[in-house]
Image (cartoon, rainbow, N blue to C red; front, side, top):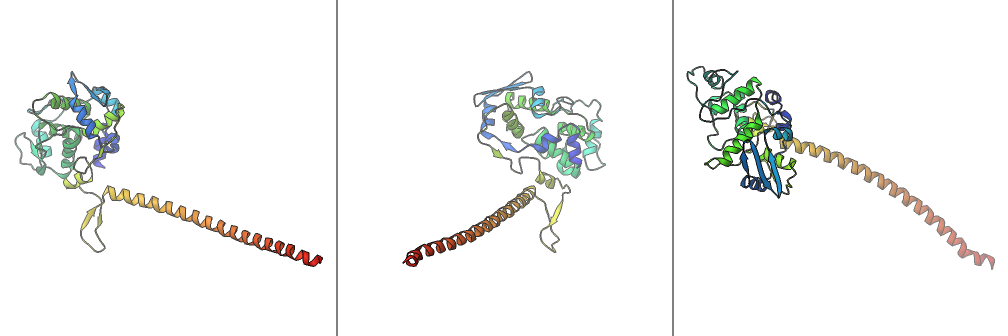
Length: 291
């Protein structure tokens, strides 16, 4: 619930929790191959459909605010207007009082609740390809903004990271795959085939477990001291089984009703047959009676 509250503050909760996890890999490859980023505008050609958007347009597509903190940098501390000092931010996310310099913080040095924030920044807000176990200056400032409820312009970071990937000299994996798949879909690009997210690709239950975060647990077996997390897929399957059981019960009731109707028809048919046999018998005996 704490994570949900953090996502709700900047208006991201619905988008993040309702993201369906589709990844249109072929269309994304075509998008990146034809992509151009200039003056904050992104344009590309995918499946013969012209795709074009900026931060404001992304806000309309994804239905999240297009305003707030947007100072994107990697080699220095971002602008800290209305934020604590770099040292104070480092101390907040470093799980120890013995910190006397502003520096990057490793995931293993964080408290569980801060590990979750870092993983969200690392996988969703500002994904990176390498050194994914270290929160750099940019990561720490974004975590500080989320912790304080300070608005972040997520769209601006999407545009700026795409600009770096497209126009930079260093190879980089395609960022924001699930978000871009949604954007392409909303811009009427025909997505004929897509993949579903794997647990390592998106922010889900396994992410929480990897961050030592407390989750609902159930025993493995009766009398066992070992605990296992409730997997969302298992929960979904249980719900589906319950729905199927209800459908089976409904069909059984229909079968019983049909069988009852069938038995009634058989009884009526037997009566009609008996009646017809009587009529036939009388007709056969009629000549003898006349004689």
